[in-house]
Image (cartoon, rainbow, N blue to C red; front, side, top):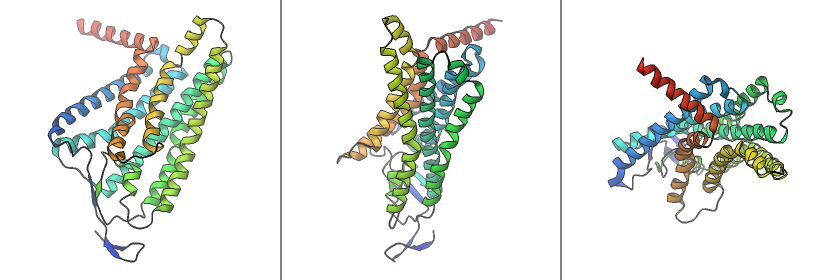
Length: 320
């Protein structure tokens, strides 16, 4: 700890760690919550890694749509691992302390991966737009080189803004209180504990976050506007169902992700905001990465067929 002066000129001593309150109010349910979140984490990792494995190993899944799906599943494996292991440790041991630097690292990785998901979902919606609205040119437009550029761009575009935000935040001082009323280091809960005037940092974070999330969100909305308009112009009911089935899984994932994200960061806050914020945050930080592989596997014939082949090959190998 080192003494610093805040904006009022009063010396204070920087704290070295925060206390993550999380779900500490549910004292009698800590072990039960640990088991529930452990099961969620195992299912999430298993589901997303299975998707990655199938995309890499199954030749008939070597298409742009599944290439981007593999990127999304890889990202969500990291996404869950940024938050859940620390939460599980806290629930099991009761140790809710996290260093200030550790909190900043978690916030940085979380922000980077959230923005990456926004871009990947936008790229996937653009892929579906080309497949539905320009099917004759799809193969030529969505070639391997272009797919690699889109995937790499999704990861790189998310990196710069969150890096700038975290660099600026490194100049902040924290003299107490040290309690973060959340289960992970989210920006609003984190910045609330900073000493002195944080308006400039909050404004910068708002502007850069808007730059990093609004363009992919608008691209996603625009793509689906054209997709739905094209599907409605298809004369036969069978044709409309077939066209919609190619993007229904992705549309479901987009709706869940952006719906819960807006519930946390956009909707007005009520008096019970803290508890509702934690519950809403659980959906896009914990449940969405678990549900996404299930949505793609249960509603996608190609993925189910690849999984069935892999299981059959595994069973046949065990009989040898």
